[in-house]
Image (tube, rainbow, N blue to C red; front, side, top):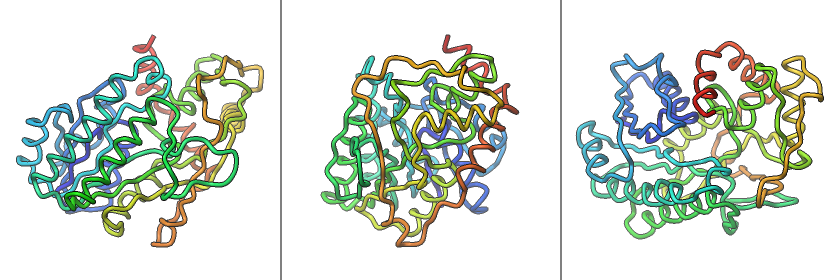
Length: 323
């Protein structure tokens, strides 16, 4: 397999590249990444000299760049992670989200069609379904996104599936719950809270902290995408969940306990605009074809917090650069 990963220097993409190289000895992986603030070459420092790995700095919105990579590296499979993904940033300015998430996905799909790509996985999010107080979303539910971020992801999902229905480009759409693990940019909840506490700072909780998310260890997400490359059906969407629904307050308490801190380190702040209360996915469709999460939440969270404690060299420059 000659695999192209877009956005492979980001959190999930870099973990996925590492997983694929470790799991498939004969694979070659090309990473196409424009290196925005969340794309960090240090995420893949340990494999940058692997002869099976190549990095190309370039924009997925640039068709000439995409065509060149598909040709030069004889790509037959694409896993498309590249996206702007932070809800707060999309509320402040949605324009870059429309450009990258919609136009960039269109460029990737159209180039893949022209080059006869054999499998294209478009990686999306549970946020496209919107919020629910009870029950869990299945893949056939209507999309009802709330933020500029999730709206652009919903648009790109539909665009991707249209390339199967119209052109028979073998596209699969995946929708995952909240990921956590090593190399997550420290604007996200778990790494932000863990590193704040390591710096002696308080952790900011929106509203009452009762908002609910399902949490998926990033290695399980990588395993699921790898599984779907072999077992997924073109033209289908698959939910990927961890089966671990927690309130933001529960997550905070888990991190506090792991670092020996108490509730005095919590700072409640004004709630996010349009803050969805609960995301929940039914991922029985994926389970029926043979995939299950493998990492228990408590063990994976403990390992994640420990990783940030042992890798201050990685996160401190990112936090200092954001100030």
